[in-house]
Each structure stands twice: as C-alpha cells, then as structure tokens.
Amino acid sequence: MSIRRSLVFSVIEKYGGLLINVVTVVVLARLLSPVETGLFSVASGLVNIAQTFRDFGIANYIIQEKEMTRPRLATAIGISLLIGFGFAALFLGGAGVIASLFGAPELRGVIMFLSLNFLAVPLSSVAIALIRRRMDFGVSLRLGLIAALVNCGVSILAASNGYGALSLAWASTSAILVTLLMAILHLKGDILVRPSLTEWRRVTSFGLFASGAQILNEISQRLPEIALGRTLGFGAVGFYSRGNSLITLFSQTVIQAVWPVAVSALAQLHRQGESLRQPYLNALSLLTGIAWPMLVLLALLAHPIIDTVFGAQWLPSVPVSRWLCLAAGFGVLSQINISVFNATGRVRQSLFVQAMVVPVQVGLLVVATSFGMVEVAMAALAVSVLHAALSLSQTLPLVGCRWGEVCRMLVPSLGVTVATALIPLCVGMGLGWEAPMSILGLAAVAGVCIVPWLAGVWLLRHPLGNEIVTLIRHVRRPR
Image (tube, rainbow, N blue to C red; front, side, top):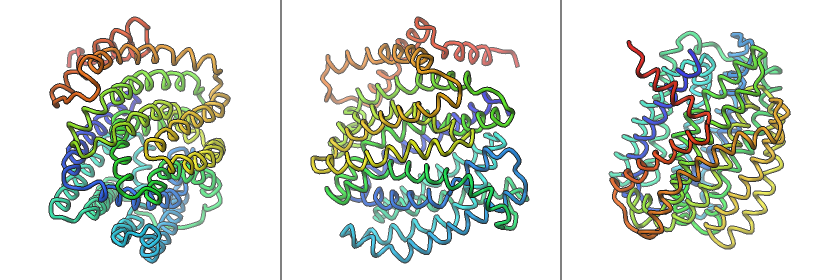
C-alpha cells in the first residue's frame, strides 16, 4: 500500500475515532464528576506506565525488524505474554496498597479491573504491529473505529447507571478485547504461533533500550496527574485531565493519524537503505503546517470550547488547556524525532533524551505542585521545549540535516500559524475571551479560519500547497 493511501486510511480512522470520542467525552463530562474523572486518570496513569514496561519495545521491534521470521515473532509474543501476566498478578495483588497510598479505597476496584488488560494487550499489540508493518491501514481503520464504538457504548451505558470511574475501566477492557478478537480473525495463522524465547537475545537487545525510552516517556506523560493526585486531590487531577483532553483530541486528529504511517514508512525506507533527509524535512513541514494552527485555535478558543462542549463546571480547566496547547506545539517536533528513532532502530538516542528530560521534569513538578495545576501546566511547557531541543540534537545527525535547514522549513509553518490566529484574536478582543459561544458559532469561527490558513499556505509557498493540489487533482480525476 502506498504512503498516501495509507495516510488516507489512517486519517479516516483517527477522524472517525475523534468524532466518536467527542461524543463520548461530551456525554461523560455530564455523567461523571471531576473527582471520578481524576480517579480514573490516576489509575490509568499507573497502569499505563506499567503497560510500557510490558510492551518492552516489542511493537516497534516488529515494525523495524528487517527480517521478521516466525521464531522471532514467536519470541516477541512469548516475552510480551510473560511480562504481561507478571504485571497482571502484581496489580491484582497490590491494588489495595496503591489505594491506601492515595487515601482512596475506591481506587482499588478501578486498578484491579484495568489490570485485566495485561492479559489481552500482549497479543493485541503484536497483532496491530504486524498489521502496521505491512502498512495494511485499511484493516487498522476497521479495528480502530469498532474499538472506539465499543468504548463509547460501554462507558456511557455504565456511567449512566452510576458506576462512576469503573465505567471507564470497563470500556477500556472491552475495547481491547474486541480489538484482539478482530485482529486474530484477520491475521489467523500469522499471529497464532506458539510462544517461545528462542530469539530472546535479538529481541531483548532492541527491547531494553526501546522500553527504557518508552517507560520514561510514559512516566513523563503521566507524572503531572499522579503528582497532582498526591498533593492537590483527585478534583485537581480531574480539571487538569479535562484541560488536557483538548490536546488528546488534537493528538488523535493529527499526530496519531500520521504517527503509525510515518514510523512504518520511515522504517520501510530505512530497510531499503534510502536517505531519510528529505522525508524527514517534509514531515516536519507538513505536520507543523497543520498542527500548529490547530493548536493556536484551541488555545485561543479554549474558554468557549470547554464551556460549550464540557459544561461550566469544567471552566477551571481553561488556563491549564492553554498552557498545554503551547506545550503540544513543541511536542509535535518531538513526536517526529521519536518516529525517526523507532524507524531506524536508534532507540539509544531516544533513551538518552528521556533520561535527560525526566529528572528535570520531576524537579519542576516538585515546585509546581506546591502552587497549583496551572503552574503544573506551565512546567509541562518548559519540559516540552527541552525535549524538542534535545531530540532534535540527536535526530539531525541521523538524517543528515542541519539546524539551519530545519529552521527554514519551519518558518512557513510559523507564518501560516500567525495568519490562522488573526480571526480568533479579533473575535476574542471584540467579544471578550470569556464570551459564550454556541457549537455553531465555534464551527463558524473554525471554518472561517481556513481562509487565512489557505492564504498563508499559498503566499508563503508552504509544501502543504503541493499536497492540496495533488489531492484536488486526485478527487477530480475521472473514475
């Protein structure tokens, strides 16, 4: 499957999933309290950190391995299952201890149910990695949309019946089980192999460094909410999580649509011995040209978006969301760099970056949590800037680029972002930054912003212009 066709399928999957998740989030924002949301955020944060340990870099190993033999696949499955079952037992046995540390007995049930994911994720993650290695994103599209529908249905049904934070845990496990079943039905004999450890040296030589980088990255992502839960309570975690939900929606719309295709395509080019310089520069330009304007819109319209979509009870999340939007802008650069590390098997560089960033983040959080959740979001921005700078310093030698080339590629994206921001800036200064706005009003402002965005792309000769022309020609081509 071609890269453009793969990207189309991936974008459809993520935008379809986004639509489903928006419905889910909007409904759940009215069914769950900030405390219940914060409770699940802490539980899922702890479990997700452990899931990164469990992954051991297996998924990325499968995607980048030049010769994926059956014994190597069996070893990948064997290691994944071994670690997964170990963590399932650990969390089932230690859920009560964790709950007592946070002074929240209700946390125990949520953690125990989420721990069941360790039994299913090992196989499902390997299956999805195989599908992405083949760049079979049509199958990935079906899996993603059906899993999102299951998650939506189960969470809303359970929450409406008063199950609180547990409803989110049930939805998560249900979606994983459905994904696993569908992936097995698609791959059949390719995934149903007897687990072994015969190639453990080859797999673990990659996995040790890859998992180390992933673990530190997951800790970095989850640490703010866990720290807030320990110091300011689950209500603060809930507000921080809701502020971060705008970034999550953005990530699903842009980053997660491009990420699997980017890693698979770069890995394929690397296996073929081709240069990554121009593909890397193109990825930087195209992704920032889309992501940065979207993030600026989210930051400037954060108050009406949160008020209209989630409800007035979540308005304390607005300043958090704005700082996190800025942090996500630098995070876009980091994501592209991480995709290069994973695609080329240079996971030591990724580990180095994370090892430098996490201690700084811990120090900033120690100070920030003594002030409040807004200061925690400001710390997230500082960490994101540091991560982007360090990851760029490690990526540029790999792809044969210089800092000047990267800066020149980013200038048009910055100009397009400024052009896009003009309309929401005028609206905010004219009506007030806290003026109420309907869904139609928000959609109208966002829609009108497409005009200056397109104008900026054309005037600055942004590479996105060529992609837009190619897309129009493809649509108009006679069938």
